[in-house]
Image (cartoon, rainbow, N blue to C red):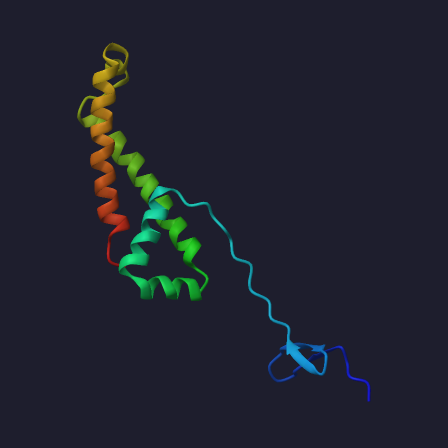
Length: 129
């Protein structure tokens, strides 16, 4: 009796391929979109590894980890840029200051960026999910 190379189970809709004497299911993982992560996405990943292993495992099992981390990264970068701009305006760190006294401008911008990064990390990266 000749065995068919491929069969499909009518009840489940799963197809099988003959390998030697056994039929093995044709399993295929769904395509997952891959994103390059920035500093905030990588920081969130490290935080999940240390403090929220269950959430990390669930995201991996559901194949949502990369997309989740990308979403956190995008949200953090947008918030970071917006807050830096707002604080710079509020504190009078302008292009005119940059032209007149570059070192003062750099120092003040570094201070603003540092404060904003601390806020973004606390509010988005180290938040409880």
